[in-house]
Image (cartoon, rainbow, N blue to C red):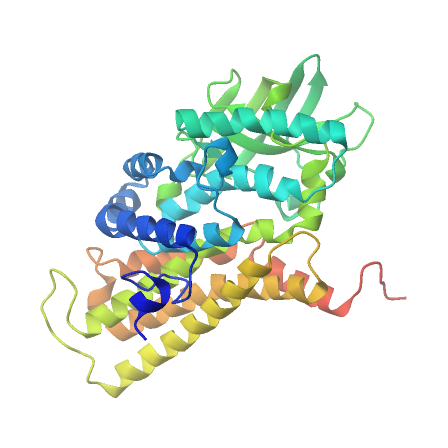
Length: 421
């Protein structure tokens, strides 16, 4: 059975061939078209210059993709968690930096929308949240506004092991914010920075992770500054510079979640941190696609030399395909299992999937470079960029490769509350 018959598409998505809903088919088709016709050709530009992909965002905005996970009732496209992950992987296939930065924006709608619906709130909190969420959704749907999601501070806070050092002090009608964020993707491009910070309750009271606030700070806010250079190995188009907040005041309606709700969401919806992984599945797919195309002598602009007849090349492609299929399978399962209060087995599988994708993407890119040979290192071809971008996945908080293996091993061996004597 052909892929077009099974999925209803004329291509095999990065997540693999499968039956899709009509909405999923439409969204994946549009993502594929944008990536194939526009993003792939521009990817080298953003990488070479370490500049933000503004042209790609013009296309995403025109396609309505900034409202991808905004509910239909609020004017959005209404994609659920699994659908978002499929679309993100397809975009990552053509431009990793675009897919990764779009994730930061989409999470501001996923967290306040789908995830927040599963978190316990009082009736007053729920009403407050829905009213404020509508304001943010209206900015995105009606005005095409772009949200960032900076939370890294160079401490254990981003991993959930300490309170955020950036603080918000309650004042009449709003909050006074002070602190600093590093690795702030979309710095200089976002209209709003959805920061995670800790409520400062008093000079003698220690900060508490349970008092985490999620607040949208306008890019035009007085006291917000952007600093630092951005010249990394990979994911150069994310432009993740530093943000400093010095006595920045925001109104109450800037809150993206009621006080204390983010902490509850992080405890009950662990899959909320998996949304970085789809980008890297897309990168793995792109490396595999290029390798097959290259060995068949079908890369546009390159001599039509076939290299597929060598057994060593065939074995390498087989190894890449095996790893890609393994990644796709566990990825597909966990995006459909994602929910509040997962079972222990579901949670451990989620961790395993995250690690498998983040490390597997680089493994596939490594095999691709070795198999295609020295020509593949040239910058006019995409493989060396894919390799550099793929290596960044295992370094990304809150679930770096080290942190996720630590979490996976510990939670497999201990039940909640268990300790060794």
